[in-house]
Image 1: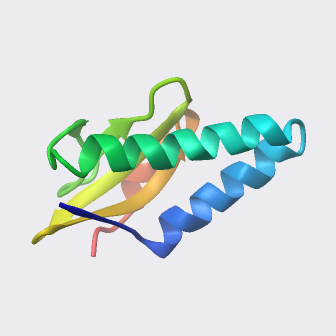
Image 2: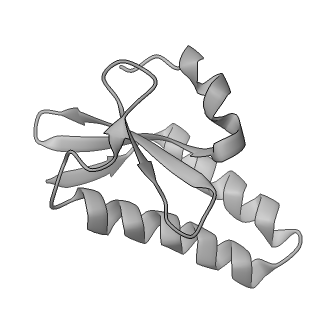
Length: 99
């Protein structure tokens, strides 16, 4: 199964990198690499990992060893990574619309 990162999710990764890099560039690189690698390794072979999302039509994958959650949706043969949220942002996520 192919994993596609939506522009908003890519922007989330960039923001995470920039935010953490203010204090520790190595930690910033580690965290963003963990997010990318776990999404790729855990979702590519099995499209239904994680739990049912808070928004209809989505699933959520907790990124181990980080406070982040990847929100994704299956569209045909593709898995679309829609958003990467910090655990503290999850409650505000309900306003997201899945295309």
